[in-house]
Amino acid sequence: MDGSGGLGRGRLICLSNRIPTGAEPSGGLVVALADVLERSGGIWIGAAPETTDQPEDDLTEIEGGAFRRLAFRLTAAEQEGYYAGFSNSVLWPVFHDRADLMEFRREDHETYRAVNRRIARIVAKVLRREDRIWIHDYHLLPLAAELRRLGVENPIGFFLHTPFPTALALQSMPQGNEICGWLMAHDLVGLQAQRDCVHARGALTRLAGAEELEEGLYALDGRRMRLAAFPIGIDTADFTRLAGQAFDRLPPGIVKPPRQLMIGVDRLDYSKGLPNRFRAFRHFLDLQEDWHRRVSLLQIAPPTREGVKAYDDIREELEGLAGKVNGAFADITWTPIRYIHRPVPRETLAGLYRASHIALVTPLMDGMNLVAKEFVAAQDPEDPGVLILSRFAGAAEQMPEALIVNPHDEGEIAAQILTALTMPRSERRRRHAALMEGLGAQDVHWWSDAFLTALTGASAARVGR
Ligand code: GDG
View 1 (cartoon, helix red, strand yellow):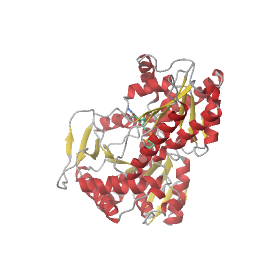
View 2 (cartoon, protein in one colour):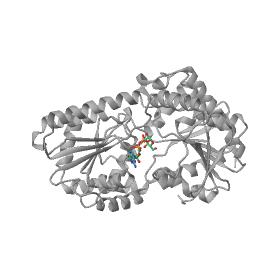
View 3 (cartoon, helix red, strand yellow):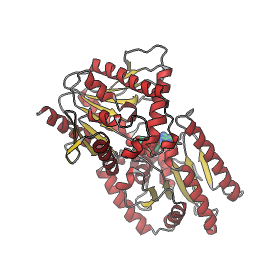
View 4 (cartoon, protein in one colour):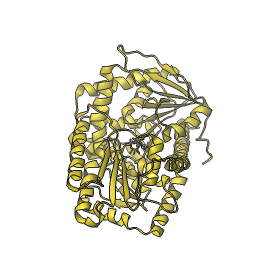
């Protein structure tokens, strides 16, 4: 890798549902792409946080920051149908193997298509011939197909942050196979993990009848598309530095030795496996009376997608469970579960990871899971904590030195909590060093470089350059 991100002559045009605003904590993705965007004079285009009364096809410049940011605005009805509706009540549950939570409404599907058509029109207006386009995530799946319809022949890449469903799961949503056609409009499709590539192969060949010309190169209706795994990373070096500083600034008394701290950090989402995590901890406490008062779970679960029913339900379920566990076990000096339903500043989070002896990362399904990576990067290499990681997180493919668990098996999680609590320091150091090697080599800069280099290669092959 030459570190140039396969920098061609053109600008990089990044598209995501939400435009990154200065107010948000600096995420790894934005940091990784900021560099290429800045050097190529590129632009990030996304939806403004506030809605508008009348549909408008203008882009508003967002001032400040190292690279250009242009926002389009959606009406409240568009936001409801495209974002809360089709994106988060159909695509998200289906892609996370929860078709039972799908709420399909034909109008939402139409709004989703129409919004993507509108974004395509808006984007086409600012495009130059040499630009490369990088589209992010499931909100914008049909965007490339709409751009192609407008005659755009620029290189277009797509990265899916969620898992890719099996052909079978895809068929649980009406018109599920149209997604294959949308994928084919790109030069390059990046997925998180090998398992996702296997699922995509099944869907593309069996549902859509695409031909696989060589591994990961698909052909359908005169178009060719390359598909591969690009597991997203974090800004490892930066996170390690942040955790070291933040740990020193934590308020005193967060961890009182010999009490051990387990941490969980997840958007409050049904895919993150929070109820099974709480039940597994209760199971552990049932079995291990010796550990009462010596271990507690700090769960940070900021709200997301409020107003979508499945999210209101999971919140209620979790609050009930936390209350029950604490009711059954707490005493005047010990609360087994501290549950925080608010966002915590990034620095504090980094410090808390470092103060924790165990991270419980137990999603039922997850594209990658960056919390697993952040926890490892935050540890003191001399005395590191232990990561308990679900086999259904994309991260499990890259992190075999974690304690890998089946999140549905509460007995197994309980047993691994005990293993982690009693793991000798030499073994913790060995596992941590191996995990850090991977996190150093495949950080978020590696990821964006690898994707953009592959995009340049894939589009050059298409136009025969
Ligand atoms: C999607 C995919 C994929 C969480 N709570 C707070 C907070 N966070 C930060 C974490 C981490 C990020 O949010 C969450 O990232 P994850 O990867 O764990 O999960 P999703 O949000 O579901 O992300 C996922 C990811 O996209 C990237 O491709 O890995 O599979 O679902 O960085 O630290 N940050 C702050 N306060 C909080 O309370 N500041």
